[in-house]
Amino acid sequence: MVCHDANNGTTYYVNYGNDNYIYDLKDGISTLLIDMEAICLQLLNNELYFVAIRIFTCNLSTGEIKYYDYQLVDFGSGNHIQALFTDGKNVYVVMQTYGQDRL
Image (cartoon, rainbow, N blue to C red; front, side, top):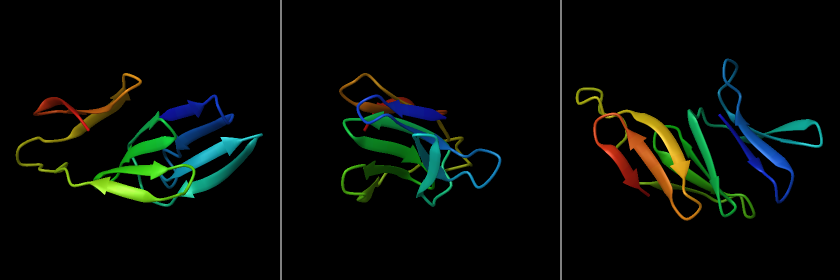
C-alpha cells in the first residue's frame, strides 16, 4: 500500500515482505516513520490512517498517534479489515463481515 502526499512530496508506504513497518520516502531517502506492522494506509488532511492491531491515525505534523476503539479481529466471526479508503472528507473501513463503515 502506498500513499503519496503531493503537498510535501512525500510517499508513505508499508515495507511488505520485510518488516511491514510504515516508511516515508522523500527526495530518494526512505525513513522509518512508524515501527508497527501495518496492512493498510490512507492519507487525509495530514493524518495517516493505518491498520495494525487496531485502526490508528498519525498526525504527520506532530507525530501524535491515536487509535480508534474499534474491534477489528474477531476471527470466529470473520471480522477482518479489507481496505481503508477516503472520499476526501472521511476515511472509511471495509470489513469482511460488516461491509463499510465511516470512521
